[in-house]
Image (cartoon, rainbow, N blue to C red; front, side, top):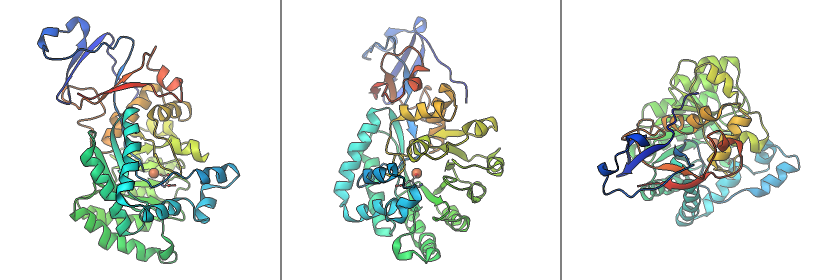
Length: 383
Ligand code: NIG
Ligand code: FE
């Protein structure tokens, strides 16, 4: 992860949405590309676009009122108990119409693309019943149709226990397993299924039932796990061949050993740690154990209201102690693999996708995460 080849004084040829060629300027033959418009990039970098593999970027409204409660001392759990948190977003999803949800989400996602994101995963999960989950999935599917970047669709089936099932969580999980997952899978409405495996939400038994339902479908598993407590979800997720386990702020030695040598990617979300004031995931321990680490924004109104990939890059360096190049690999190629796009996105390779970042003038790669809080993207190249 520490290695990322850099070409200085380079040329790069883009056309038909793909990287056609690159090399150093002394090997550049302008005549080979007579029809191509030329752009000068002196003093700038061309970077692979960020591949944000964990977002909740379709939502009805921000929740800045909870932010103020938090400043006054309330925890994520306190807020959830008062009907805030995921249930607050769910209430708002149940009253918004599909067109308004689409319009507001599109506006946000266009800003994400302008800031350097070239592939995006989006989760449902604020529906909490089939009708509203399908509304969210329908919006995600329309975004996928309309946007020029690839969108991976995650059915976050088990996100929180709705009030109507307060003391009947098992019935809710049965509903998800027996009806929702087969329906969404058969209709081809999603690529992944996600579960929030956490104390007070869904336990390891629930994760197992859901994982088994996913194994019998054409979908794959991703898991929110070890955000606040370590309850055995990582071992189960690895057993169920989850594509990724996401969060990992609270990680035991046993959890780390379960991830070692496996294909499941550890997706870290430092924006959430920053915003909620919870521990940062032990990225160094994971990397030192040769576990693939991806970074994502977790953009959502409750625990990470930013999508800014450059800020996530800074947090990864400053708080997770990742080097600038490790973090860039985690935000690009490893993010791409965490959403099944590792062979077409996240790297500058011949034949790979040609949506790339042209940065503002910059002294070095290290400067990007160092000068935190800035958007260093000058423009997205998308030819
Ligand atoms: O990834 N942890 C669960 N889900 C989201 C937060 C959702 C919310 O608070 O709206 C997360 O942090
Ligand atoms: Fe999340």
